[in-house]
Image (cartoon, rainbow, N blue to C red; front, side, top):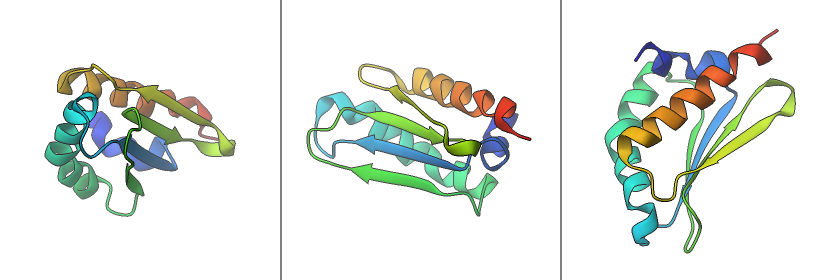
Length: 98
């Protein structure tokens, strides 16, 4: 999972949005609980933002160079599927590098 160390190289910011209590956000909450420390250790100066809001659909937002933002809805995805979606967002940032 070498891509985990490339967050700061390919992205400007990463945001997780999810509800604190809804069943739809349960897998996203679990993903953040299990993976935040590892991601932050590999990318210590990189902003990884956690936004909890009642009733919001679980999402990951990635900010790239040149003001480009992309997001993926995570509702109904398992933890391995969330990992795959995050990997895709990170790898998609490589073409934005000058």
